[in-house]
Image 1 (cartoon, helix red, strand yellow):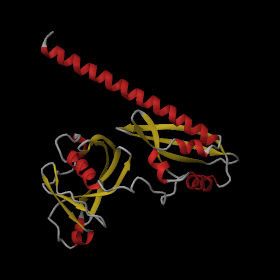
Image 2 (cartoon, rainbow, N blue to C red):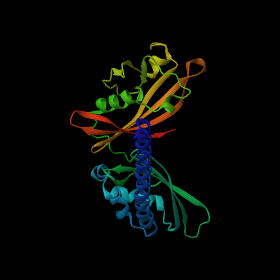
Image 3 (cartoon, helix red, strand yellow):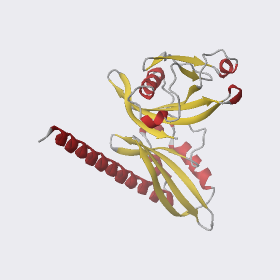
Image 4 (cartoon, rainbow, N blue to C red):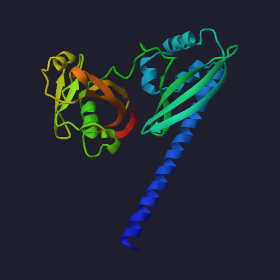
Length: 266
């Protein structure tokens, strides 16, 4: 077979396999969403609790989850629910469930974030039901510097998806603004990393740049970590406005942490 034909055949096979894997992920996520929806309609909070990642169940007791669940219900009973898979981004799945309570005409939504944990979809978050003060996945962040370094290494390397930097200028120096915790990350894909406070940035005590980054979230779910990175672009009067946010999934390895997949880009 001609070399070009072989390459084309290999590419076609890769596309078929990728499509099949994506379809399989969507199907398996759909099954888990059906479990969640049925438990919601039947008022089975313990079954919903069991759908969460182990890290959630390790750090958040069932009684605390049930308290948030009961507070969200406020004596109401879900009469109808219709889920919709918004999309799958790497290891992350995103679902919105439309809910109508008995005796009410107005509907509400429960947004769900899911994690593909070794082929099993598990809940990570439930908007509305879980209160913002319910936090987990941040108790053991002793390796957060290594985790963030691995995320930044990918984002600023040639391996990053091209759309990530569309309409943004790739800086020579990676400037990261932080409020309280300064991590020991000094380089990203060969570029120096400089950490500055918002005050230093406003006082022009940082290197001149049109783009700065922030790391608003680092979460560890067992052998998987999730890092969120905001890209902020300089506007008038040296103010910075968020232009793009990305999520990066990493996995634990023998040598530390390594990139696993991109998550949502918004």
